[in-house]
Structure formats: structure tokens, C-alpha cells
Length: 88
Image 1 (cartoon, rainbow, N blue to C red):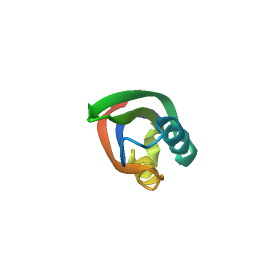
Image 2 (image 1 turned 90 degrees about the vertical axis):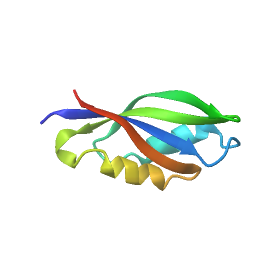
Image 3 (image 1 turned 60 degrees about the vertical axis):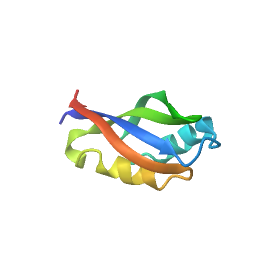
């Protein structure tokens, strides 16, 4: 069983969303077996900053779908998109 690393772009609902708190909520929402291997921040426009976590999931769990679904339900998240996926 291998692992998959996915770079996921998480857009907050507004520039007023506390990114540190959002980051903690994303970590808490991870499905079992998934872990975050670091966060980056990407300035989008007009003060809006996206969080870009690299998430590692087991290869046999169906990819990143469970992580995406968990992140979409987190308070303060507007949208979630997978930017890149690769095997470890």
C-alpha cells in the first residue's frame, strides 16, 4: 500500500476569515488516515489569501475525495480544489 500526496487549494469565504483558525479547523476535519504535511499561503487578490495544504492519504482510500468533502464542510471555506496529486 502506497501513499498519495495532494496539493489542495482552500479558498476562504472572505478576507476577514482568520487563516490560523481556519488552518486548525482543516486539520481537525481530516478523515482517518490522512495527515497534513504542511501549509502554504497564496495571495489571490484584494487581501484574499488561499490556504494550500499538502495532504498525504493512503493510496487505497479512494484518493482525495474524502479530504475534499471534509474540507468543504469546514466553517469559513468557500471552495476546495485539488491542484496536484502524486504518489510518494
